[in-house]
Amino acid sequence: MSAVFVTGTGTGIGKTFVSSALIRHLRNAGHPVHAIKPVVSGFNEASWQESDPAVLLAALGRPVTLQEIELLSPWRFVAPLSPDIAARREGRAIAFAELIEFCRNTARSAPRTLLIEGIGGVMVPLDDHRTVLDWMSVLRVPIVLVTGTYVGTISHTLTSLEVLARRNLDIAAVAVSESERSAASLADTMTAIERFADAIPMVGIPRLVADASDHPAVAKLAESVLS
Image 1 (cartoon, rainbow, N blue to C red):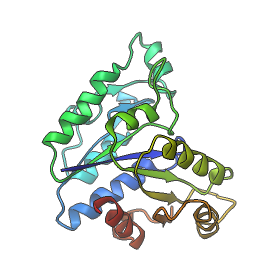
Image 2: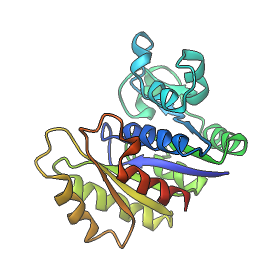
Image 3: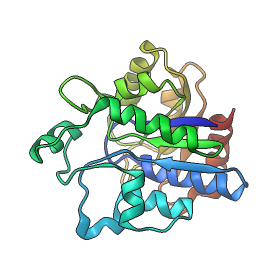
Image 4: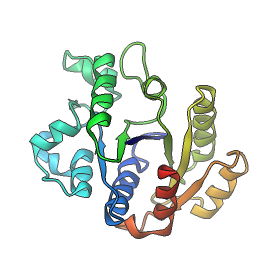
């Protein structure tokens, strides 16, 4: 069994889009895969069918129900804010040790590949003292960094790579998910990042691709994840 952590340079940049495409690609290739998104904010039970965990369940070919979502995402909060603030508004908190144990237990019982999708960006706070970076640092599994082509993405991406490198984390790949109405092209963004990315594998996924599972970039990403 191997696990991969999917993180991003920010919120709404395509982590679930990339994760679901990767899941479908691996399943189509006959490779057993499971996924979890332990922490979710902005979760509305009135529209849960549109939530990120629901998208992952559909990609996994599992029943898209609230009960299944509870298994993938035990920590769900209503407010679309960072987890620490969203949890505080509900009089709750994320028990970091329980979060780590949930990931490790799932990894032990998962099939060959487990995708762990994070929340927001690399430095999003989980509680008063820990961030997503601390979460990744404890798990110490390879990282897929998802970024976009929005204005500012080059700086955000290089900053994230620098932070991950300082924690000696293994960066399996950078996935550039094309942003809507982007000022820069996908190709130009990738070229700019590659100049500073120290030969880290990079893939570019067009936003106009509704199901990217059979896109060559996702096939390349799968190779990086499985290697």
